[in-house]
Length: 218
Image (cartoon, rainbow, N blue to C red):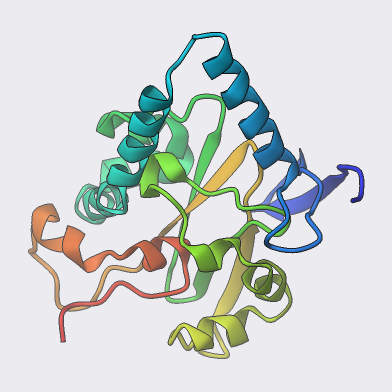
């Protein structure tokens, strides 16, 4: 297993050097942070600081968070220009309106437009905006998605059923241990005048990762 190493990526016109854990040899191999999590969890339980039931409760609370919270954030951005401006300028602070504390992790929100389509990946592990979207899907953590999205994003998007026109730029954003990305999808046509409560159901988890589009019901 290789040693951890630094990468510098261009994220939304800002270069952010960051650090990933060592890349496992396969998707079934425990990564650096997984091993650390198990060790810390077992130590906390052994010292009586937390119980297995408390840990399970925290996991279930995270699972329950799901994509609905992210969809509400997107719907508000579609209907509230002032909130949208704050969300794009500083996602970490803006989502506090929804009771979300990102802790030491920064949240960047990238907007899909008629000329740009954004997609999120974590190339070396599975960094994901769990506080906003809950647990990541299995495919997001797979080596196939992590490696191919960087090198052939249009092909990967097409496999999800999302065809990006040749004249539209595709931007791939690499999440890290201290930075998370959320895609603000384009608002579907013919939804003018809809309230945020009506718009939220149109926003899927996959649309907020960038592999799908927000759509009105067929």
